[in-house]
Image (cartoon, rainbow, N blue to C red; front, side, top):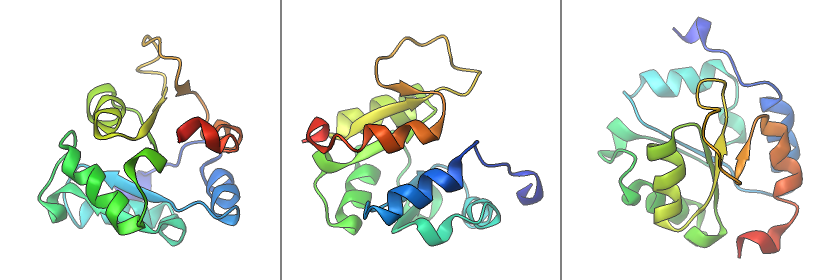
Length: 137
């Protein structure tokens, strides 16, 4: 499966910009460890991440707010300072918002029928969204 794992368009470019501007980055993913971690490695994005939490290893699964709290704690930031991007309405968007993060819904073609003001189609859109830091405080 790792050989078939394809990144979203503009993933690395977006991570380059965000990390070079000093943003702390992380991944929270449901699934098996080390399977999910190997997927992340195959995408060659682990070097951008300050935290990677895989639900099986953490014994906490999204939508449980504790996994979002753990990520913020590792990053040494408040939940209200975090921007969470995900493509699951329940496990990502609603769960991170309930935990106190600013949530952005990643439309992926299969979920474009949701009408949310805080949604993006391309990850590169994040680079302009996070420039307005006051939006998240």
